Image (cartoon, rainbow, N blue to C red; front, side, top):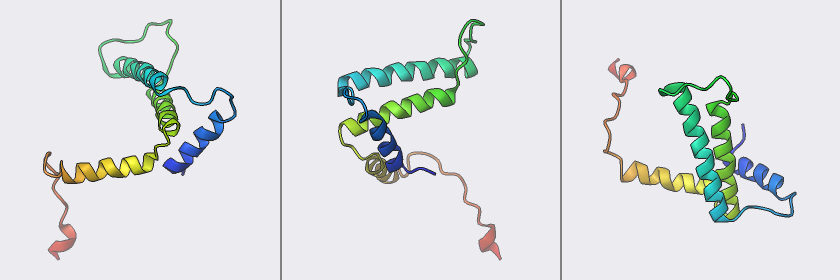
Length: 114
């Protein structure tokens, strides 16, 4: 299984073979918005009230999430952001600031009852 660092390295190796390199942050933001729209369209087809037209190409939510991930990694790489570190920071924020924000599931204490 690939780590986040592996994914970032894979994308960097792919992009670095082209003279153009990474798009600008503004262009990458536009690309991410475009990909999010495509993801939203697929989710609406599968779970919403708008079925696909018979003439529309079959895509999947998985494919659209993959496109989103690729553009997100490009964005992070272009700004030299370590996504694993970014993830760790946001998880720490959720664990502290939002620790009691939602109702937690009941823990199973069957092992302790003996």
